Every structure is written in C-alpha cells, then in structure tokens.
Amino acid sequence: MQALTKYLYRSFPLLLISSSMAIATGCGVSQPPPIQHVVLVVFDTLRADRMSVYGHEVETTPFFKSAQAEMVRYADVKATAPWTLPSHASLFTGLQPSDHGAQWGWIALDERHLTIAEILSEQGFETVSFTANGFLNKRLGFAQGFSRHEVIAGNAYEKTEKILSRLPPLFAEFQDDEQRLFLYLNFMDNHIPYSYLNYGREYGLEKHPPIRTATEKWDATSKRLTLDEAEITNHRRAYDASVRVIDDVAAKIISHLTVSGLLDQTLVVFTSDHGDGLGYHQEFGHSVSIWEEQLDVPLILRFPNGWSGGRVVEDPTSLIAFTPTVLDWLGLPRPDKLADVPTFEEIKENEISAEYRSYFSELKREFNLDMLTQYPELAKSVTHEHVLYCGEFKLIVNPRPQLKFFNLTDDPNELNDLAPNATAEMANCVQRYRELRALGQFTPFEKRHTIDELENVKQKIDISVLRSLGYVQ
Image (cartoon, rainbow, N blue to C red; front, side):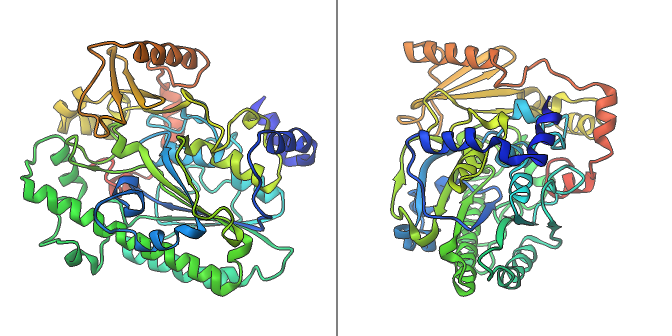
C-alpha cells in the first residue's frame, strides 16, 4: 500500500490537492506570503542552549540576535532521535522513526518512503543538496528526489567553504520568476572535531580540546579517559567557538540570497538534527542517550519580506512537522501518510516523542561486536529508549523495564528523577505513552532484524563513514 501511495502521488499529484488544501486552510494557522524557494539549513550537532539567541550566557550567535526582527524563532523544539540518520529521515519524510525505520540495525532510508525533495520535484522545483555529512549519501537513501546531490569532501572548514562557494552560481540560475528551488545544506562545524577557526582564543580556548577523535570520545564517555574540570571546560569552549562559526555561515547564506535578489522570495529554515554531549551527563559526542542536550534543537525561520519577524513561538514542537508544515505553506498537497501530521504550531500536548535504538543490541554486525568488546561497561548501560514529552514533563522508558520522569521547567538539566515518587502527572503521561505505543508511534523494544535483512542493508554501509563520524572505532 505504501508503494502504491508513493506511485499515485508521483503520477497524479493533483488528485490529492483538495484534501491537502483543507488541511492548510482549515487549521487556523495564518498563511505566510507567497514562497518561491525553500532553503533548509541543518547545522549538524547544534544544541539550542549553546546559542545566545536561545539564552546562552556566552555570546555565540550575534548574527541571529541582530536578525531577530526579521525571523521567527521556535523556543522549544525536539528532534525525533539523538543522531543523524533517524532524525534526518523524520525531517525529510514527516514520519516517526518507528515508521521510516532508519535507525541502528537498518542504517538506510527505504526508497518506499516519500521525501519532501521528491514531492517538490514533482511540483516543478529544482531540488539541490550539498551535504558535509557523509552519512547522507545516495547509497543510504538520502538522495531521493534531489536532481543534484553532492556529498562534500574535506575537513569541516573545507566542506563549509566549498558549500558556501557553490551558492552564488546556484542562486544565479533562479532569476527567472517561473523557476523554483528547494535547497538542502548540511554543515558539520559543530561535530567532533569541532571547527572553531580563529574563534578559539576569543572563547578562552587555551589549547586544543581534549576530545578530537572517535577514540577519545568513546574513551571519555565510557570513563576510560578521565577528564578534569579544566579539560571539560576547554571542550565546552571549543564547542561554543564552533557555534560562533555557524553564526557566520548563517549570515553568509542570507547575504548570498540578498545579493542574488532571492531573499524576499525564499523561506529559509535554520535547524539541527540533534545536539551534542558536553560532559553534563558524562557523554561526549552523541548517539548513545536521549538527554535534552541531544534532543533540544534550534528552529529559526526567515520568511519572504521578513514576514512575522520578531515572533517567538513558545509552545513546544517537533522537527517531524517540517515536511507537512512546508507543504501547507506552499499550498501543495500532502501525501496520504501525512494527512494527520500536525504542523509546527498545531502539535498538541503529549504528542511530541523521540526514540533511540542502541547499536550495542544489534550484535549481528562485526563492528557492533567490536564496540561491545572494547566498551563492555558502557554497553551494559546503553539500552533502547523511548521519550514522551507531557507538557513540562519528560518521560523516558527503557526495556528493563525502567521509567524516568523529569520536570524540565524546574530541572532543565535532568538531575532530579521524579519516577521513584510517582505523581498524577507521571501516571497520566505513562497512560498516554501506552496509548501511543499501541498506535505504533514507538519502535517495539523487542524488534530485531533478520540475518537476510541485515545482509541486504550491509551492502549500503561504508564503514569508513561510520568511523569518520565517530560512531564506531
């Protein structure tokens, strides 16, 4: 049925427009001015709380702060997973990880799922992708719908400069009012090893940060490598300096759009796929936990003519809403599977969720067994986890079974687990979790892939990419 829906949408997209437009106009969300182009910018591994525009005490984002009057900022945004592949799959498809299945154990976005690039391509958009993250490649399904898709080579600084250099000639191609562009950009400056250029000294970095390699990251997270407070502080300063770098990148993107004359025809979306651990819960890097430093991400929009600029949306939302929201704003039909997915400003309380599947549990792969051998104690502590946000509360469930429950308003760093003293709020959140789990919103803890399935997807994996990103040794 999913394959048939994808075929029908590609072949006869206008058949779906009447129901989609009802969604777009009947939900009470005000419509922006006409949008000719869409630019989606993902600053890989960017935490919202390290941006001064989100309240960080260190000035890391002067451009975003100065441009607030022309931008809309969402104050409470969650990713669907704490690492690149499942989070991007949800961003591109509007589907939960339990639906698209692109997680540890199945490291690919299956072609049966319709992406926003495919939808916009069918509607006449030129679809272009420049990504600094080697994970987002054609073999793993992330080129679906892009007429031009390029994985950029080099270190983080070189990748960023190459991507920025491609923008002026690309934008020059879209001076004709009838041409439309969907552009996806991914930058890796906030990913270990952090790219902080000449900002390191400005942010108090006295020497190189202590974690620059996959081995150092895993050794620190597993407590094999002990860092003192000065070293942890140095690591955080390096991260802050890398945030300052991407602030410059954002300014350059807006500048290129302005010079090309496209800015006031374009919706620009700045966001991230996940955050990064900076030692607050021991973890350095990401991909083995669901703390807020992994899931709380920025979302800042610049509409044509700065429409609705200066507005701050305080209500919580999720990156899963990106595809349906943008389609609605463009006045384009949604695929059937997204008919009931809420927009950024329609998500109701007790509907925002995330999940993590541990690759320590997928032991049919050689590199999983290798990691288990190298870090046995860490492997014991890392499990599959489900997350549900219930207002100001956050529920975490793992298969042991074990519950954790935090009040994020009173305890934003998640230091005080309320689960041992169950409350009515927790009982209500657990009940809602059970309802959503029964509806399939979470991947069953017991789900395992067969040998044949693993062998099938194994052919798509480039282990060197996993190593370069620090996911395995």
